[in-house]
Length: 67
Image 1 (cartoon, rainbow, N blue to C red):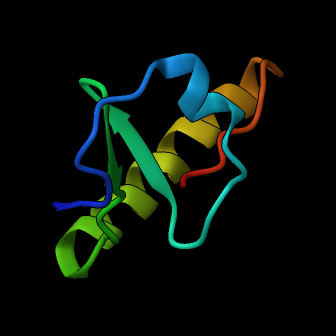
Image 2 (spheres, rainbow, N blue to C red; image 1 turned 180 degrees about the vertical axis):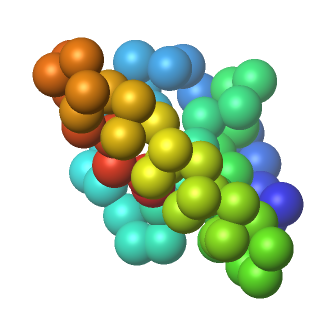
């Protein structure tokens, strides 16, 4: 995890910031660069989101898009 800000900020202030690439997360008052999924994690994420989408599609509830 890469911390991108040393000072604490509020959630409201974080949500008011423009989106960035790579994405950042708000964790306990700090802005952290969101880690990019690699290898097995990406495979599991794809398989899980596919299984969830199949189930949700059958009940016509919604569609899941992984981040």
